[in-house]
Amino acid sequence: MLFAQRVFHIAGIYGLAVLLPQFFIELLPADVVRRQLGEEIVPGAVHPEHFYGFIGVAAAWQVAFLIIARDPARYRLIMLPGILEKLSFGIAGMALYAAGRLTATTAAFCVIDLIWAALFWVAFVKVRSEPSQLLD
Image 1 (cartoon, one colour):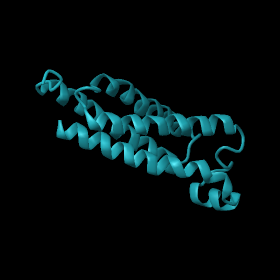
Image 2 (cartoon, one colour; image 1 turned 60 degrees about the vertical axis):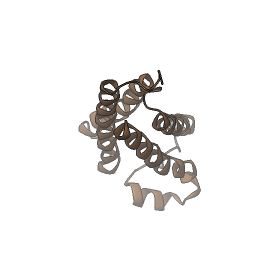
Image 3 (cartoon, one colour; image 1 turned 180 degrees about the horizontal axis):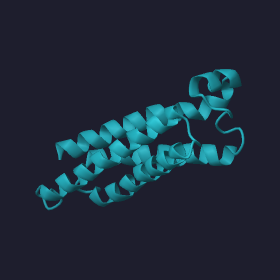
């Protein structure tokens, strides 16, 4: 249980730390963003509804991870869509990187999400093998 608590707690904090600053990315000068990210187009500039929608939904999932961390046995089934959340960004990002449509910097974050997906799966399996505390 401790493994799952730690994994989901760290994932939630890490995710919020990475995602929330992106809500303010358009406030930075475009040349600074391009220099930092290596992007041709400033994120959110072309389809802001997709960009900010993605950030909002992803941030909501980080809060869900913090909730799972509080009681992994109770919220075990929510781990499955959490794994899907991590896989969807990780796999899509790696496919885009392989096609030359994504920078190495962004691809690195995709790899991190794939690692989180693996850790979430291990947590899911470990919580199942532990005695349930819901009956206490």
